[in-house]
Length: 135
Image (tube, rainbow, N blue to C red):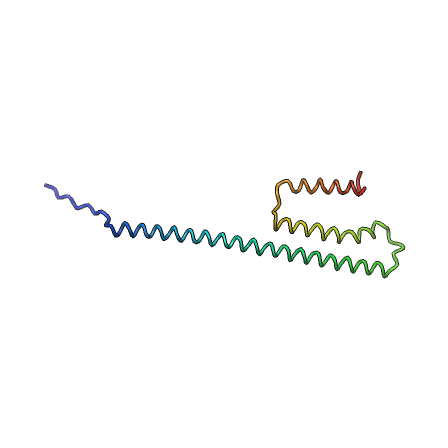
């Protein structure tokens, strides 16, 4: 008669050890996922404050430019300067401050949607028509 080797079944301690190892790996994966979510929230918070700081810097720079140009134009004779140039030199910093600030703040806090560029273009056209710049 042939000898049949004994079947090595896992003991109760090996099975429970495997279960514990699997459970520890799952807990570790869950902890890493929560840590990644916290890092993402921290990064979003940091970038939003960065956008606000950049917007404030742009507004301050353009306000300084507007003040400087206004002071220079008021202190000099502007009789030979075309009216369109005078209007543009005052309006350009104001438009720049508004546009850059709104774009940065919308991007940071709301995020751009797919239809925003079409809506912005149509609003610019309507604004230009309302002010009489185009017919």
